[in-house]
Image (cartoon, rainbow, N blue to C red):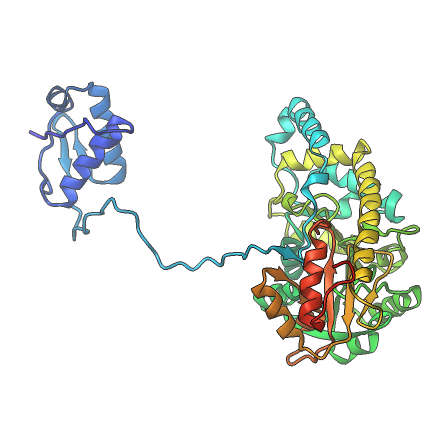
Length: 471
């Protein structure tokens, strides 16, 4: 008769008994074809209910360790070659998960300040969403996203960016990185994709991981050079015309029309317009998008809520020309939208009720003040002969050019040993063996202004070996 000690059982009793019988079978203590005790007999032996034994036997039946014969009972199944008994000790596998370093101060962070996220408004919107959208929240949304969110985005683009967009053109996804993958499937891996150099290195990595031919086009003072797009044979140009990362260049209207002319000059050419931080133009109205002046359906517009709200939301969208939108729903509509319905309905309410516009206006004012503070501290720490600031009226970063002979990588490494992260413009150059320019990125969206003087002091000492003016 089987007998098991159940005093140490912490989970369901039937599962514990099933595991005990399973171990006896795999260890060979119960032979193939051996008749197991009846449910009642084993229940009496163990002092448990027959339901518990029935559930244990049912679990073993479903896993194939035993089989039943009508009116005869349960028997041990033939397992073939017996596996080694599984030990209860946790497995230690050699899986190397990269750990992100913790910086004392990070000049390169593109995070947003959590203190300024509208938590109270967002909590209110979430409660309202749960209370008013019972059926919608449990339904599968369209491949392009919930219509209510796409309509809210279309209205926002009309009022803020002057874009006339049909909600059906909009495709919502969990971040631009996911949408890039969809675009590659939609446009084709056989095309040659041109990206700006210097530029967003992760973009080149994404294209490479999808097996796409990706080539680099250089910049001048007006943005990506059209002659270089032609020289590399690009068929798709992926660019940031409104505030290029990392240089900060804003493309003038003459270059925009030149780009559109390049796209219209050959069948199949397209432009991906990445408008990642257009909300934060500090002076004047935002510049017109390429999409808004495109009359031939050659521009795919992309944006994200990572900068305007938080990267943790993982919500981005793209606006497809009508022909591409139709192709998307013909060929890729089998994909489910990757943003949960709850977040989509909450964000739609946040936008349509005017909270998003108010948040943007409030953050634009905050970042404008913060930018002025940061620039003041930089000018107090460095003389004009030591440091020049390259900035414009858009975005949340600018560039610092230093009059130094210390190699860029040496500066980065020295500061890293002191817990300070800074990235040179050279580190964003996608071509090998890029020359030093002694230009460094300063992203101020998540800077702690109170700690900035100390960080600038370290930078001053590593570059010039002297102290800041306030010390």
